[in-house]
Amino acid sequence: MTANDPSQSFLARHQFLIYRLFSLAGLMPVGAFLVVHLLTNASVLAGPGVFQSRVDMIHSLGPLLVPIEWAFIFLPMLFHAVVGFVIIANGLPNVGSYSYVGNVRYTLQRATGMIAFVFIIWHITQLHWLGTPFGGGRFDPHHATSSAAVVLRPLLITILYAVGILSTVFHFSNGLWTLGITWGLWTSPGAMRRANWISIMVGVLLGGAGLGALGGMRSVDVEQAKVIETRMEDVKRMLEGGQSPLESSPSHGQAPAVHTSETAAPVVPTSGSVPRTPSGG
Amino acid sequence: MIRSVESTGHHDGGQPSQSPADHGGNGHSAPQRFVRVRILRQDAPGEESYWERFEIPYVANMNVISILQQVAAQAKSRDGRRVAPVAWDCNCLEEVCGSCTMLINGRTRMACSALVDRLLDESADEIELRPMSKFPVVRDLVVDRGRLFHSLERVKAWVPVDDSYDHGPGPRISPENQEDAYPLATCISCGCCLEACPQFTKIELVRREDESADDFEARRTAAFDAGFVGAHAISQAMLFNGHPTGKMIADERLTALTAQGGIQMCGNAQNCVAVCPKSIPLTRSIARAGRAATVWAIRKIFDR
Image (cartoon, rainbow over all chains, first blue to last red; front, side, top):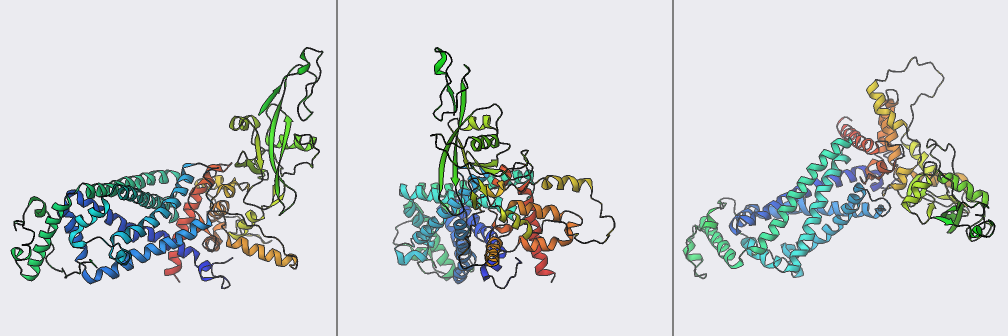
């Protein structure tokens, strides 16, 4: 009956802590990563050069990127997913008998959680270098826009991504609202209603960013993006190793002028850049 | 469905009208209407449940209890078989005792305040009665709500003044506190919030042949302790944690609320507040308990 009955299993004794950590993980770091990820991707709408510079910024972490990914993205996400499946398994949705808005949201929260889980695994396999052994890992951080655009271009893939993104965004923004109740941020019905508007606004904003990124990837000119990316790569190399862009990109037969309208916008990181493997790890 | 059985003897001297169940005749020219009821019955704990259909004369302003009284009185199914009267729980008949909760047309509510005319608006064909699905069935519509009361024990839903000493007058309660507490105090332990909760699932244990009554009770208590306490208990814990004398054991209630099956099991579906016949702000209590648990957990980490 008490919290620390030694006869109980570890999981039973610490159920409250585990569920609260689960709730927290959904916001930080997993939810925070989702926001950064979707907004970064939406930068493709400003041109392949802008998106490339954002990706370069992330990859300027160099060898720290892998431990950061595992510590702040993959492991918390896996923890959130495992506890989430336990929660789903222990619930008994009854939206057929009680079709209240809250109950529909309860059911959707679980459905979108499962969709998001499948989608994210597929998404990682397809684009992240972790998926390389499985025939995926097709995102090239040196050619951020073009490599992603080629993968996302087929209509079916775009539709599946749209479903995956919207499910993930619903799960996060609705989860934001329930998190506020769980931790006791908003307690009265009025406060819950007002908080709901925050949740809706976050959802619309992130949903727009996600779909915008997807649309941006579809509408981008892959060949042109490749040219821009190659030029940016050359500039980076030049700045790092004192190499001239003229020497490094003769094969493309393009004028070596760097400052086209699209490459002028991004600020190319000059320091902290570490030579990367082509797989982008 | 309300069937209007037009008297077939209208033209030949006012013969009694016949209903299929052979109880409709009243000898008057006014049409007798009938209410059809489908009841999910179960003869004993653990036995198979089965549907039985009844047809009873319609009376204006009936409630589900008066239907069940009529079913018991006629003890005859619609196809004319003599059957054992349907068992059900009720007491006050004014939505105060909380004992007549059942699934009426698929939704949890009190049989005493479920009016037949409104139910027929919902499903004109037939009224459906089922026992609550989250508690073990004792017989027909009677369920064992022991777990509901055990949850109240878990969170110590009482003011701990249990001795014969004169402690003098208790602390004053402000009007604001009263207004806050009163809605929570109207809980009738009917269990509607638990029945509608997707996170509250049935725990039904069967006593083993070689098991003593005490051993079974201990096993049942342990199973109840591991399960979700439920919205009613969380709300009662908040009621007594807000009471000037009750809050003396506030930490004990929070310990119970953060133990296994505590507040963390809430999934925020908010069905509890939607079905509560007393309109108790249960989700407010749950959120307040969540806040109290947050503060309590932080205090526990840093103040020890």
